[in-house]
Amino acid sequence: MCPHPLLESRHLVSGYGDQVVVNDVSLSIPKNKISVIIGSNACGKSTLLKTLARLIKPMSGQITLDNKRLDRIPSKQLARHLGLLPQSPIVPEGITVSDLVSRGRFPYQSLFKGLSAKDYEAIEAALDIMGIKDLADHPVDELSGGQRQRVWIAMALAQDTDILFLDEPTTYLDITYQIEILDLLTDLNRRRKTTIVMVLHDINLTARYADYIFAIKQGKLIGEGSPSQIISEEFIESVFGLECKVIRDPVSNTPFMVPKGRHHVLEACS
Image (tube, rainbow, N blue to C red; front, side):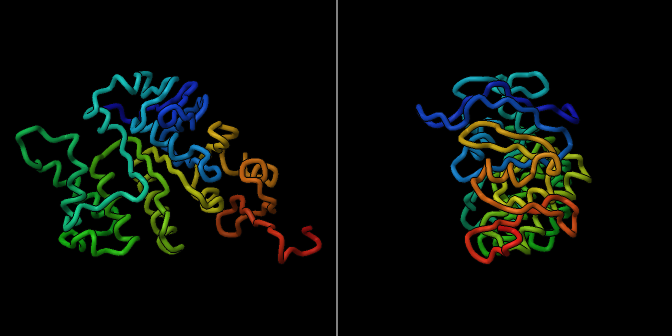
């Protein structure tokens, strides 16, 4: 397995049926970094993520992993390189934490063999990284939203991939859990050098946690770069149609977006 594979798309077109959602997107995912895809609702973020993860077949264009066409890599082999945590995954009824996490080892299992010692090591390591070893025997459907998200990420970690895709991993979580999950993903990136690609809605959390940002508007890639390179008042208005002020985050020294809205605006800012 290549330790640091490069994922690229060239003139990618994707969608559903005859409806084009992602239109002519060419990009390279930075190795060993945290990348975030942003954009307004229904702009194509999740469709792009799923297409890059080979969950959706492109209409045209090409995706390559280390210069090998993604569509020509056998599924089980690909699952050792790419992991995907979809938005709002369904929990199998009654399944325990350890059983769900163990499903991440599927790409490494033989047809007639059970879990190996290496599989159990990977499962235990994933539980440990996510801080949920004490929940191993608990039913997943009895856990809180934040705990469940930890379990799903642990399953993806047990898969032991080089690249991890996450579709809105902080959706429906309160701010405490959002920070907790993003901190854990940052730990994973720094400890294992896992390349992480996420879809996020929160611009300020994106600016704080992303090394690199891809901005999508109406299915097209309209900007990319580090948070400091691309997040500006003009950029936010062009992508989201929102007037704002951009200041420095006093904690992380990254760009911080303050929306204006129509009320509570000081005259000096209007």
